[in-house]
Image (cartoon, rainbow, N blue to C red):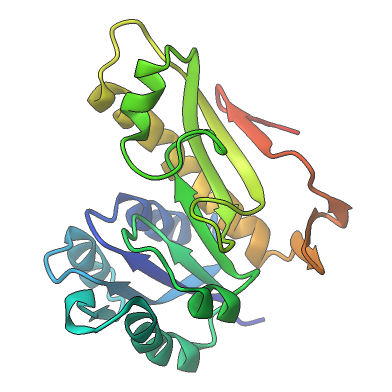
Length: 219
């Protein structure tokens, strides 16, 4: 049986990309990253991909007149690969409806908050400013609304009194590196499926996210 094929989109350091690479190396994830695409030539994640002998592409969004034409340039690279999953790993661009529709139900994202709280940027500071007792990250399928769509897993971490945005972000990132490969594996193993727009896990509707907390996954 052929390995699941993945395409990963990045804009920066690519630490979640590295977590996926390591999960594949260890055998936890039976998949192959066919391409890494960045909208920034300076993205450190491109170096990570190069070290892992993964094909890399830079498509500078500044060279395109609008969002859709940039997205179509990415689609020209992605479509011949016929990936099982397109993975957003710190990709800092809002996607067009054309792109989202084209990869609907096989396009996933990780966002550093317990969605639907704190969509967009500066999520860690927002959690601190709101005096939240817990914060975390969400892995979800992408829908048309920003940082929305069916959530598969949320990782929870406590917000500590002495936390800064940086210390909280570092703790959340460690959990991101654990839950993103989990969700990818669930998808590539065929455990996550859609019946129209209803996301199912093991054939049953997934109406609430799975929770990853203290090293345990609970329903």
